[in-house]
Image (cartoon, rainbow over all chains, first blue to last red; front, side, top):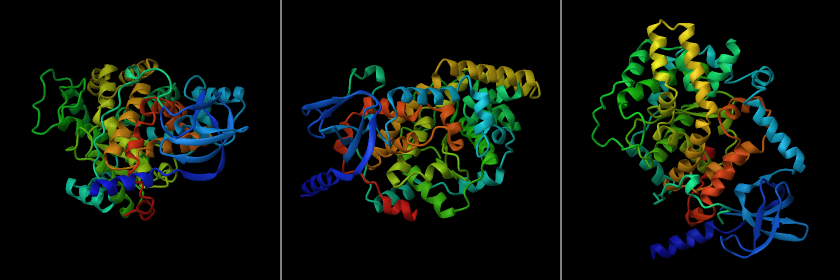
Length: 173
Length: 284
């Protein structure tokens, strides 16, 4: 009986959540499937940077619609927002990358104006009182377990994911 | 020159920055201790976490973490909200119980800064910023972000980085030479060199893969961390609040792609996992 209830809860949780038709775009070449299930028939393909409407989300999946074509694809490769032109997508990412490399000093001067920037970290003084305060908030195992029960959180058996080298090439759908 | 050094140092992430710039007296001894060839006695119940620093005792690791945590708190204080700090500690401790190091004295803190970031230090000290917390809409997202940091601690990424950089010896020299500029520069040089080999990127991807597993083991819906990454990816990458995060991590789009390759739709079987938006809103 408990198992049946568990399955029902799981089924409810997996119900597709309709969302307002948000604009979105693909961050890589994607396949659209007829159902939000790995191995379901491929109904179409979209290229990296292609724009679409996101019409629903369910688990790992987003339902997208573009030019009469509609299907499910993994949300990992779907960004919300307006699709940048193909060229500018690359440019934008390139700009970000350069922030961390050759243009570092320049962008630091522009961007590092607040928060945890270099200057702030460089001048940091050991904060013994803050550390003691932080350590006073630490929770015991028992307290954490009680908190989990309160929220209906139960332990699941999940194996660690293999490193990319051990993952077969291609979309894992 | 100083700015270039600082930038190189920041690429090693905040913890090392603190280590170099404000090295408290005790830390030198601890770091020297790291070089001991003899393996440290294993504590009963201590996890068999794979690590290059098998000679690092737990006490030494925790002491390094404490010192670096104290310095990070010098750069950004804790948010003055005890209920929030306790809440984050409860979520974090529960997720950490699912890791290979459940018995560490895990300590979590919310830093009072608009920066969007999170930090992990050796020994179980984990920080999340007020800015990152502000992007989240439920407890599964908080659990996912904390799980990424817990994974760094579990895998001893920061200790490994020091070892790979041969930075420990340099830190020792740094202390022995009364914190001379030359030793400090050599230390930074080693750090930058290690980074050019891309060690950090691999560690971040690994922490993402382990993080989603830990959060899912804890009973949360599995897509909390990917959702946080999507929210970060949707922001303007030129935002000041993102500058440090983007310097020390791969692009969120790339991290999502890698997670997608690793997870696929296989985690949909954990669809019964909880998101707990109400408890997150109340923060208790």
